Image (cartoon, rainbow, N blue to C red; front, side, top):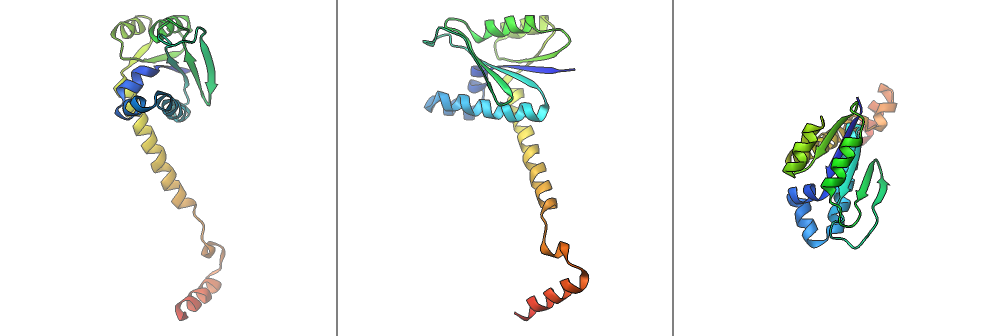
Amino acid sequence: MKTILIVDGYNVIHGSEDLKRLSEIQLEEARIKLINDLNGYSGFKGWETILVFDAYQQQSLEKREELVGRIKVVFTKKNKTADSYIEKLVYSLPKAYNVQVVTSDFTLQQMVMASGAERVPVRELIQDMDAVLKKFRDDKKKNGQKQGLKLSDFMDADTLDQFNKMRVKE
């Protein structure tokens, strides 16, 4: 069954200590970091991901959607909240999909569950993303050590012995 992860971007930014701190300095950098982190996470999980930022108080009048790596990033149109966009999106998706919605908004959580989708608390997503990243790094480190080749891997025993004797003399 195909899994679609729908993320309320600003909820996650304000729910993560690192992203919240970064957003206080440079909001755009916090959004970029979240997009990059979700790209890796979605790729690892094999999920389709839609990240929604509201433009509720922005100057842009039009909704903007763009594909960034593996995820679709949506900026809602002016005066439309991410919650209302997500609600409409969840109702429009086929019931055959496993839909997971990440939000801290209680009303949206209730609607999500009533529609048959799953709610994922922001804290749970952040913890799972951290765990996936750690597993990826550990696997990469483990596989990197196994794949390292040495010159001795290509030598017969006699040649290796001769090289070892020369090394000891110096």
